[in-house]
Structures are given as structure tokens and as C-alpha cells.
Image 1: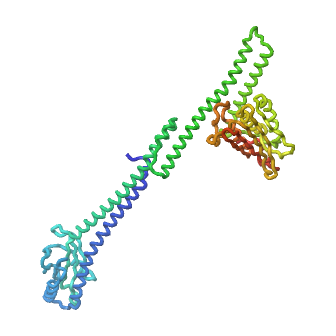
Image 2 (image 1 turned 90 degrees about the horizontal axis):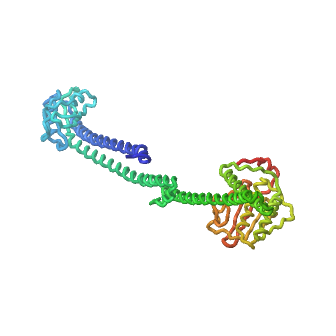
Image 3 (image 1 turned 120 degrees about the vertical axis):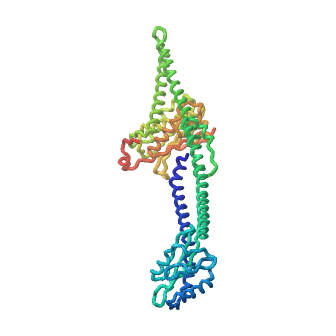
Length: 488
């Protein structure tokens, strides 16, 4: 019936609370019993002390004198409604009892013998009478001048009313204990239920999400803005992120499949064309055109595969950098030169003026940084329409002598404010109409991070995009701090 958090709460917390409450209830019952019984003892003792005052000057050895004196005391005793009084002779036999009290002449009580033997001259007795009634008594002996016992007086109280009051108070204490236990258990169970129920529901929904049913997150509800509510919100947000990531991954697979299929189709088509040409011969122009397409599309395939491999290395932490001191200006200039013919073919103005100044070197992987340059410039050309402009510049300022910046600006379609924060995420592709796998920018960003630099993007939809690459300059001794082969 009870399991999990509820079971632990019952075993660890509730059991301790119940034990404490039960101990308190038992202790209170003992205290009440002790107080009532002590009250009876005090009443008996107070009456006995009065008797001591009456017989304080008694010196006679005569039993007759004792009887007359004690009879007068019994007749004038003012607490007859509270307790009974019995006069005992020197052997402990009952000779006289107070009017209106039960007959105790034949009762066997040991308090007289104990009082006679005691130096204090009195003793208590507690027990049952022959009628079954519980009683408490105190007996005080009267001694003559010579010290011999001439008689005694017994004060006796029925314990039935006292026990009834003890039972009444005990019932009240037990009832209060039960009320306290109920006040602990009921709110406790309600509190545990308010935790367990949403957690169990959250567990079921999480299992559904784990199985790919992301719509289950819509069923997550919470009543309170507490830790449970925060957990529900976190799981809901996680499910939405997973759904988005899953969609992005599916789009990525679809894009990559398309990106791979397109060059493969071209390669296969031209290979079949050259193979099936009449008489096994093909004119030189067609041959050169077909070989050009095959070489171009093979290079495109290689680029896609390398991009996927780099992404896999980054994801698994196996990206290897071969660091050295390099001239960042020369590497970027070479990359721009590689893309000039493409820009001319696509009717795009690629503007870049190599600075005349000599810039300080950068410590990094030559090939990886060139990969970043190619990705940024390729994206700029890819998203810029015919007649547009792609401008690049390298900046090194004495105002900020620790870094070199490369800025690439295009007049392309731009990126919406909603998509801009996501463009460096894996699988994300803002513009689905343009080819590409959608992971190139994520790889470039990671390479920049591994070099201690940064890749920043500013864009507006319809106004173009500006990408800023920031590189820390090489410092003496840096080679010792960063080994040439870094595996991350």
C-alpha cells in the first residue's frame, strides 16, 4: 500500500513522532497518577500531623485514658467526609470507627505493625480491601511516657474516586495524544501526497517522453510554485528542447542525405554518360565537362564527410589541434583568393584589401583556422544574392593589442532575431532553402573556442550579416604552455 517516499516518511519520520508522542502520553499518565496518589498521601499525612499535636503531651499508660482521649478526637474530627478514622488498641485491633464510614474491623492491614516498628511512628498502606475496593491508609501509633504502644489511629481513604479521576485524566491525555497524532498524520500524508502524486505522474510522463512522445509534456501540471513546480517546468522545458532537437536532428539527417545524394547523382550520371557513349568514345569537350563535374562534386562530398567527421570528433572530445605560430593575415588572404573565382561566377562582389602592416602572429592550427575562414566566407557567398557584396577586413589596433579581429560582412538575406541565438547550435539551419548540413557553423565556433578565441554574429533579417572572428595574439612562452598536439 505504501511505498517509496511515503514508506520512508512513515518509517523514518512518523515512527519517531509516534514514539515520542506515546512516551509523552505514558509519562503524563504516570505523572497524573503520581500527583493524585501523592495528594491522597499528603492529606493522610496532614491528618496524622494533627493527631501528633493532640497527643503531643500524652503520658498516660492507661488504655482507658487513651480510649477517652482518642474518642473525643474522632468525634471532633472535621474531615470525616474525606476519610475514615479507626481507633486501634495496642494489639492493632479496631475498637472504634468514625460514623458513616465502612466497617473495616476485619480487614488485614500491615500499616499498624510497620508503624509500631518505625522510628517515625507512622506507616502507609495501599491495597485492596476484602470487598475489592482499593484504598490507602496511614496509621500512627500512640506511645506512653515509657515508650510502649498504647494504641493507634488509622486514617483510610477509598481510592475509587481518585482512580476514577486518574482514569478520566488518562483518557483525556490519550485522546489529546490521538488528536496530536491525527494532526501529524493527516497533514503529513496530505503533504507527502502533494509531493508523491505529481512526482509519480512526472515519472510516467518522463517515460513517455523518453520513448519519443514529446506531446506528453502538455499533460504536466502543477498547483504550487515550489520545487515540485520548478521540476515540472524544467521537465516541460526539457521535453520542448528535446522535441526541437529531435526535429532539428531529423531535418539535419534529411539535409545531409540530400547533400550527399545530389553530388552522388551527378557523379553517377556523368560516369554512366561517359561509359555508355557510342563506340566507347566521347568528344573531348564532353569528357572535360563530365570530369570537371565529377571532380567538383567529389570535392563537395569530401567536404561534407570531413565536416561530419569533425562534428563527431568535437562531440566525442577527440578534436586534435596541431598548433604552431602562424601568420593569420597570410592564411586569410589565401582563403579569400581561393573563393574569388566563385564570387565572380555567382556575380557577387568580394571586397578585401590586404593590410600593408605586419601583424603579430597567432598560435593555432593552420588547417583548422583555414576551415573556419572557408566556412564563414562560404556562408556569406551562399546567402548573398547576385549583385550583392561580401566585404572582409583584418583589424589590429594598438587600443586592443592582445587580439586580432577578422570581420566578414555581407548584404545577404540576414538572420531573424528569433533564429540568431540558435545559429551556432548543432543541427540548426535558419534558411532551409539554401544547401548545407547545418553543422558547419557549430564546428567553426568550437574550433574558435579551442583556440581561445570567439565567433560572434550580428544580423538583421533583410539587412545582411556580420561575423567577427577574434584571435588572441601569440605570446612568448605560449608554446610551452600549449603543446603542439592538443587532444580535446
